[in-house]
Amino acid sequence: MTNAKAVPGKDRFIIVGQLGKTYGVFGWVKVNSFTNPIENVLDYEPWFYQQKNQWIELPVNDAQSQGNSIVAHIEGYDTPEAARALTGIEIAVQRSQLPALAKDEFFWCDLVGLNVITTNGIELGTVSRLFYTGANDILVVQGNKEHLIPYIKDHFVLKVDIPKQTMIVDWDPEF
View 1 (tube, helix red, strand yellow):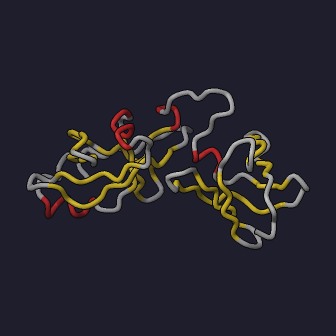
View 2 (spheres, helix red, strand yellow):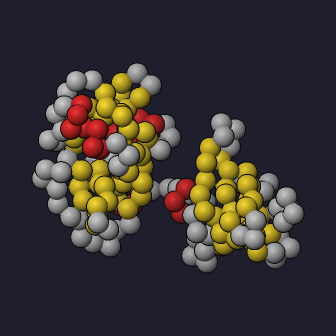
């Protein structure tokens, strides 16, 4: 990429989207935003991508809502043929770019890797990822078996302790 520069530092990078297929004739690409609402991805500048285990600033000329989608133009990619090389690149921002949260609020990325333990002290595994169903978020917990636990606070998810890297859930280990 043109004007690419590696980003040093200790700040954690959070994936907020992925570049998709080309859009139009001037090298624009669709952005699959992982933010809620999807337009929030436009609030974060700069964007970064990973190349050879280094985070590099993504030189975005312009990005905007286009109907129900987000589109972006990346510097140096001025034709659909050139922009196709961007398909699948994950977009990240530095954790420090994200807004502060209220107490007991978490970003999905904060929950990934937590050890999940039932109220009876049975370890179910660790949160490997989350996804949204339309009704609520679902925790995917990998252990001896995979558990899909709805993230419903005070019902299934009773306590999240980020410093201790644990989550207490009211969940049947056989389910």
